[in-house]
Length: 144
Ligand SMILES: N[C@@H](CCC(=O)N[C@@H](CS)C(=O)NCC(=O)O)C(=O)O
Image (cartoon, rainbow, N blue to C red):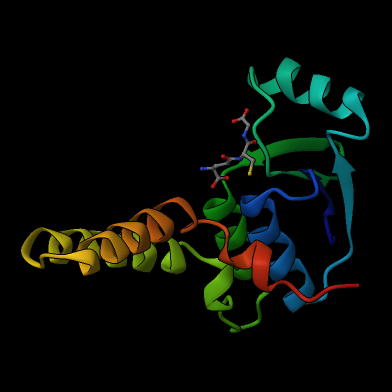
């Protein structure tokens, strides 16, 4: 039987957007439970898991329901169960975050060896790459 899936999330949450991207890619029917517009959903998470960090996938299968936190685990689960051999788009994985981290480190190291105003540009680039590395899925998502 196909489990009933619900996603605890909020608009503007970068990690939630990775999961939503996977859900769209796999064309799955998933109820969204916005914890910001419906505080009851946040309270349900706090009661069950001790915090209201999202995304959390609720998987209801017959009489049992379980909660799965962590975007990477959720994406892995969705493709393992419903992927039919498909692979998640890069933006739905940790890859952009890892690439952003490496880029930030490279720019920082370069800023140590290059003098003059270029150093400031490199440092700014490193700070930008580092602080924005988890947001790509949010920025690039299709609108509407
Ligand atoms: N490692 C987690 C990170 C989730 C996360 O940081 N979510 C943010 C929103 S994008 C959040 O809920 N922060 C509030 C909190 O941690 O209580 C994942 O990949 O799902």
